[in-house]
Image 1 (tube, helix red, strand yellow):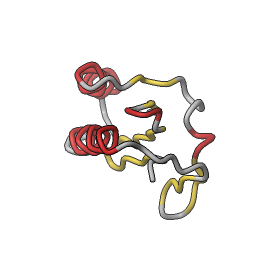
Image 2 (cartoon, one colour; image 1 turned 90 degrees about the horizontal axis):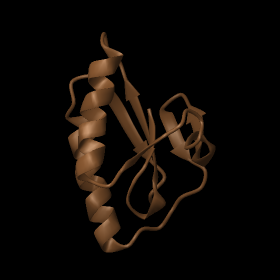
Image 3 (cartoon, one colour; image 1 turned 90 degrees about the vertical axis):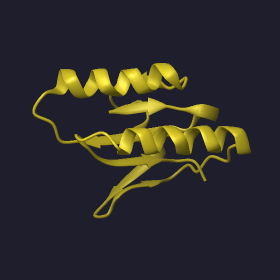
Image 4 (tube, one colour; image 1 turned 45 degrees about the vertical axis):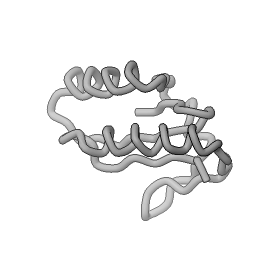
Length: 92
């Protein structure tokens, strides 16, 4: 899944699920509470390069302290979901 978070930070979410509808609804619930926008497939990938270790930002983005704190909170919530394997952001 791809999304845009606080300060316009791109977010890539890798999930392994047996029920994509459930996973998407769980993500949307988090997004709705924290002003995150689900993005169309491929729309946030431009900010990353795929490597053996995962996604590495090619366009790092500096965030304000408030936006950074909000993004880190959201990333922790997303990462805590059972179906989520990894979460990446281009925030510096």
